[in-house]
Image (tube, rainbow, N blue to C red):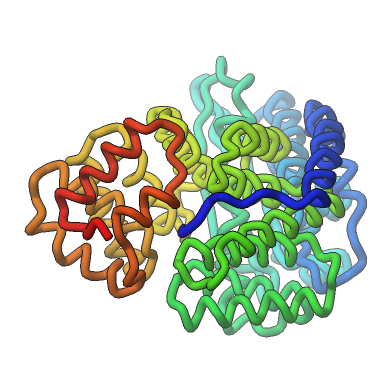
Length: 440
C-alpha cells in the first residue's frame, strides 16, 4: 500500500464509538454460543436468493451416550454455522429425520441447498466422528467429508477439535462451489457476490475489476446487504494493496466506512470487524486493529481467513511468533481452503520479521508461484534473499513487482509500510536494499 496517514472523518469516529458499544453487546451474547446460534437458525430469512444449509441429526447406534453426543454435536455444528452470516442454517430439529436418498421429494428438503450429516461411533474408548457436506442442488452428492477421532478424556475440547474444524472447512467449500460459473442458477445479489469472490483472489487485474463490477451491481440491488458491503470493502482493500487506486488514502477511508455500515446493520458481522481491523493496522492504529481482530474472533472463532488476516498486524507490532500461531490456527481450521495459497504470503512475512530468512524463502517461492499477480507476496521474499546475500536469486523476483508497481522504491516502502518499531523497519529495508531495490 502506498500511504497510511489517513485521519478518519468526524462522522467515521462517531460511528467507530457506536460500533464499540454495539459489538460489546455482541461479545457478551457470544459467551453462550449454542443458545444464541440455535435461535438464529430458527430465524430463517424467506429470501430464497440466500443459500440454505440444513444440519441433519447425527447418527449413532452404539450406546445412549453416543446418541446423546451425536444429538448435541449436530446442534453445536448448526449453531457454529449460524455465525457465518451469508447463508441461512436450518437446525436439526427443523429437518425431518429421514434418509436423504429417499427424502429428496420432501418439500422441506427441496428448500435446502446443502446438508450436513454425520455419524458417531465408539472404538476402544475413542470416539470416531464422520461428517459429510452434501450438495442437494440436483442430486444428493457428497462434496466434502472428514473424519475425526476424539479420546474419551477430550470431550471438553469438542468445539475446538471437531466443531470448529467442521464449520471452518464447510464455509470455503460452499463459497468455492457457488462461485463457479456453472452455478448460474443462483440469482440476485447473492449470486453476483458468490461469483465475485474467486475473481478477487485471482489478483489478475481484468478479473479483479470484473469482481468489483459484480459487487457494485449487487449493492444496487440490495444496498443494505452486509455481505455486499463487506465484499466491496475487501475488494477496495486489495485494490489499494495492488496499487491500482489513484487515491489510497481515500480508498482506505471508504473501506472503513463500508465496514462500519455493515457492522451497524449486523453487529455480529465478524467479516466486517476483521476487514476493519486490517485497515486500522495499515493506518498505524495498532491498538484499534488488535481490538477489532479480537472481537471478530470472539464473535466467530471459526472464521478461518480472519485468523490469517490478523497475522500481518502481529508482524507489524513486532510479534511474529504470535502471527505464526494465528496462521497455524487458520490452517488447522481450514486445511483445504481453496484460497490457502493466497494467505501463504503472510507466512513469508512472519518468517521475514522473525529473521528466519531461509524459511521465508522456501515459503515465499511457493507463494509467488501460486499467486504471481499479488504484488506484496514478492516483497518479503526479496528482503529475505537480500539478507541471505542472494541478490542474483532475487533479481527475477524483483522484476515482477517492478512491472506491477513501477515506482516501488525503498523511500516509498519506508513511508507506506506500517512498522511499529524502527528496528523492524530498517532491518526489512536493508534486506530490500541488499536485494537491489532502488533507493528512489
